[in-house]
Amino acid sequence: MDIKVHVREAPGDCYVVDLSGEIDVYTSPKVKDAIGELIDRGAYHLVINLEKVRYIDSTGLGVLIGGLKRVREHGGSVNLVCSNPQIKKIFDITGLVKIFGIFDSEETAMKALV
Amino acid sequence: MDIKVHVREAPGDCYVVDLSGEIDVYTSPKVKDAIGELIDRGAYHLVINLEKVRYIDSTGLGVLIGGLKRVREHGGSVNLVCSNPQIKKIFDITGLVKIFGIFDSEETAMKALV
Amino acid sequence: MNPAVEREPAREVVELRVPSTAEWVALIRLATAAVANRLKFSIEDIEDVKLAVAEACTAVIQHESHGEFIEVTCEVGADALHLRVHDAGRHVPRAETDRTMDYDEARVAGLGVFLIRTLMDEVTYDVHPELGTDLRMVKRLPGHPG
Amino acid sequence: MNPAVEREPAREVVELRVPSTAEWVALIRLATAAVANRLKFSIEDIEDVKLAVAEACTAVIQHESHGEFIEVTCEVGADALHLRVHDAGRHVPRAETDRTMDYDEARVAGLGVFLIRTLMDEVTYDVHPELGTDLRMVKRLPGHPG
Ligand SMILES: Nc1ncnc2c1ncn2[C@@H]1O[C@H](COP(=O)(O)OP(=O)(O)O)[C@@H](O)[C@H]1O
Ligand SMILES: Nc1ncnc2c1ncn2[C@@H]1O[C@H](COP(=O)(O)OP(=O)(O)O)[C@@H](O)[C@H]1O
Image (cartoon, rainbow over all chains, first blue to last red; front, side):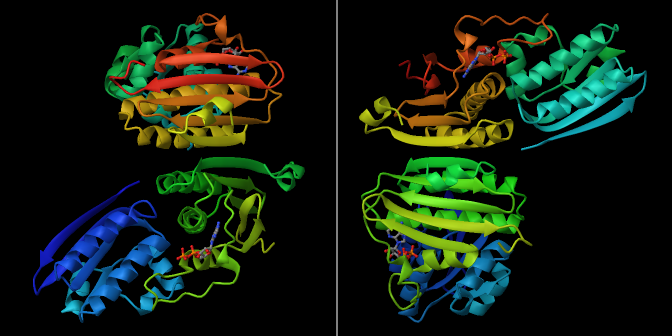
């Protein structure tokens, strides 16, 4: 019942944010802060890895959308890594598949970014 | 939130009862029936393997005690296999360690039986 | 407990009441999933129910400062799970009118209510200005169109 | 909800009400463990609390046919978890007097109550002939002798 956030620098001026756990109304502020800090430091090309996320709700989606909006103002982008069908379904039914790049592996998400 | 019961015949007229899951007021009747049937069929030397039991309450203990009493009337015995410290603790504080043979492995439980 | 619930003796009722704060939503998810599991829903349907009930609680926590607790009532029917999320708040939900999602807003309004409506088979809001808001949701077992 | 609970605003209260039947005890264990987890109890202490609350519910289910539900109230204090298990039954528990375990009886009487008393720091029964039985239990965080 918690979230872990880990940020890694990747080649090509990119950053990977590894999330693991459950993203809900209680834990999403922590995710928001981590992504916010990263963007404040000038990181506008992000891969957010959701492979270890077991659950995401509307507040979690809101944090991802908020992050995407901020990096776009700087010509940046956010790609998501997600193969969990339950989580992908949430992006499907909300139409968010159309605004995020969603990839089955970190490799493809990174390639699509740069 | 369920219990699985599996009975195996072992060398030397012994039977092994493998239990897995949680033994509580809801699931213990199933365990009671399985052990009862075995005793009805004349099996009086039992090893009950609790290695895959994550939880046991007083109704579960009651079923084990009831089984022990029945086989003892026929000169039989019940040895338990249990290495989970949480479950062993329950046998400790209730004093049931003194009436059951409790062993860390099925091998030693079998040897002590025959 | 609501009177309509008590009139049907065949249904089993589970009720959970927690403080109206973010840290308790995980417990509501856990308990609701355990109740849904008793109806033999698929894992996917259980996830839908978890998310819908959590969205309902999240809306209460985020928009309603008057209520001090959230009460979730689960009725286990033969072919459906009936959920009620009650808060004692006096704010009238905009949920009935404001259901479009607008990604251009800094805040994504209506995502929670949209998910609830998409994931559940029946959704109704009962607003009692004095007593608070009841959100009722029904999830049916597949093959039981209701 | 009991008035003593409401008087202390610092404590968070979680309440769970389930039908008084065997299949719902697992849910009570799950929810109580989740609440105990918020107090940062050790895994071992959480297991103790789970077993104690389950034994309380099991006693209600096995000895009390009048009550239709069990209500478990968890109060999260700063240094202790306070639990109340309420049933609306009218049977007076023999729990206060009959606490010896007798392995020679076909039935092992008193094992449940014995476990509750061993695992919890404080245990009291309140018997109201009209309202039912309240079993109150306290588990303290280590280093908080109360
Ligand atoms: N239980 C409730 N009490 C008061 N208002 C509610 C409740 N549930 C939903 N609402 C209203 O519904 C609107 C949409 O909520 P929601 O879908 O959660 O989206 P968001 O939180 O992103 O605005 C909220 O703005 C709020 O006014
Ligand atoms: N909530 C309760 N309502 C009525 N009787 C109870 C309650 N809790 C415990 N008891 C009484 O306490 C006695 C001991 O219960 P317990 O320790 O569970 O052992 P057992 O079920 O093996 O007899 C029971 O015989 C019962 O009379």
